[in-house]
Image (cartoon, each protein chain N blue to C red):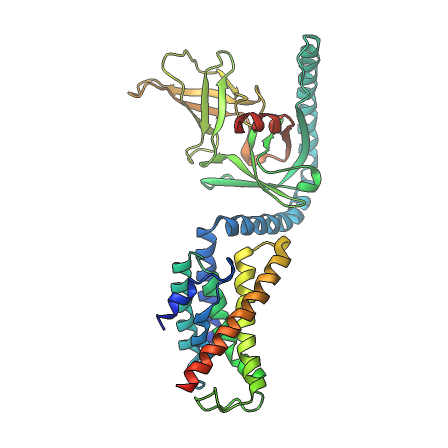
Length: 265
Length: 150
């Protein structure tokens, strides 16, 4: 104990210098968006590098489970492929989407603002503000990107709002998370005049730059129509199990630039 | 010292602001308590930062200068680092030049690297550092001459 105090007293100038520089960096970081984004990029890079090694060991031990999931996913993809071919026959065009495959190397579900990190970055074609889905449904939106890694704001993040519709009636609402249960999301802005029942499927509405229309999110598990504001309070049971996500797809809508030009006019 | 605030708002040629407040740290007494100097640097840095809305860049550059001042002194003045407080007159010109120049250059280096914070703007940063160092050096040199002649 005495030697610790002695070493602190001997090195007091260095310790004071480091403490004050941490304080000044902190005020810089919180008040300036340029530095916030720059440090965000460094943080993404470091967490990507450190999680990559541990996730590769993990994934080796989970091979059998992964194979089974891949077989299930393939079956679903076959379904989607058949539906797609069906729609081609009806003359609809789907040239505006390209999909990038990636693996999750870092995940959390126990915070109020959960972030995931994947092992593809700008070298793999991933860019900021692209939507991310898995075979079961919506995962989140890309937050920041470096050359080989990217971070995702997941649906389990109180900052994220995703545009959503009821599959059968096309009433538009928005999905948020209240930070409590990682299996339940909240659907807002559905007026009491629309008819809903438990078990209805919620899909993406296609009204944003991030997701195309019709990507599944979850089903209605409970609703409350006693609010005085004229809207339902709906609980959505989410399709994805966020604690065990490993393989995801990043969506790029190639018609985004065209849409943005129209919006800027 | 507070009148130095006025000089901080001068903008030469549209983008250069000479950092006159560094004169405090150059002319500080030679036998000093290093802890006091670091705290003084921190307070001055914070005041300049808040008035110029740069949120911490000045502070970090200033406390680094205070921390490194001992080594800069030893490097500029060699064996003669036991100096009288009238440091301005009692030493050789080249030593004084080195001392002033090093303090100003290191301060500008750290300040502009932090403000731009982007490796792609490397040449802009270097340009700003060099021009600002030269102009600040000239202004501080002139003011030192004025003070020593008083």
